[in-house]
Image (cartoon, rainbow, N blue to C red; front, side, top):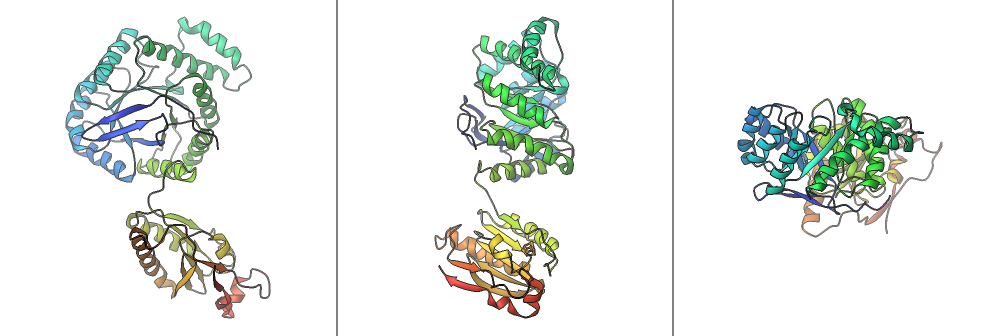
Length: 417
Ligand code: SF4
């Protein structure tokens, strides 16, 4: 893992919704965008609140029409998270959003590039200290004759790249646009340069990270549904973040946007870039030793524990007692299933041996009690008190079925460390 790239810092928000810093060493922020109409005020507020509750730090809304910016004033009164107005084609929407008290503007250099219009937006934002994201998208880049020479220079630089022309075009567009802001001494800028091509996203952000001092908003556009888009998104954004690049992220799915928030947070947790909130669930993939319906159990554990538990308690759900202990090493609470039963451990100490139907309620009870003890200062997360030793090999090594059938799971050794 590389150290985080140093950037300027921008702050968005106000006294009402709170302030969120981006870049300059702040935690990597999670964003999403509403899918419904902004002018449908009640639905828009409800959607924003849903994403905020799921962990979004910032929510963006589209404002294609005047009725959308007119709705902003009321929306901003009701929400509790900074809101970004996503502006395309009509610079007036940006001015109207600023007037309504918006917390940040997103401009697309591909479709708002009249210098006077951009200057008007910059001046309005500068007066109210509202940051602007300059968001270039692969799909909205338009080649312009006056930038031909710079493009050709960059084109030579990226000659060996499979998307060299596109890379050059996106960088030229960004440089041109950022210059307008710099000329007006406006630096509350966040930059993004998105594509649907994960490899191109890695290359373009690596290039712009080296060229600009502003925070970067990462994203892969049109990634697909959660099923098809998760890997495309996480491979690009995770690689960049591991290389120290990126200050805010949006994962984009053509499905419920709540998954964008959940997956972005999970990616940041996995990379150690955000402090986990709620259960850290690990589960075995199952194999020929399995003797319970583990897939259903894991889903139920996830569904039940996630809304109930606030602390990052590591919970392991393991299919058997044979290899499970080693695989669950480090879990605060673990259940090892076998012979239609589940043996539950809390920080390595066996606390229950219950029938399959009792596993879920008992596990929930143990996790809740453990959380209460941690909150009361009586226990500490990640502190193993005893060792779980796997049973000595009997018969064929790893044959959990035979061991369990022979009642030999009791050979699991619990020894104080
Ligand atoms: S050995 Fe046990 S814990 Fe590991 S995958 Fe198989 S059933 Fe799950």
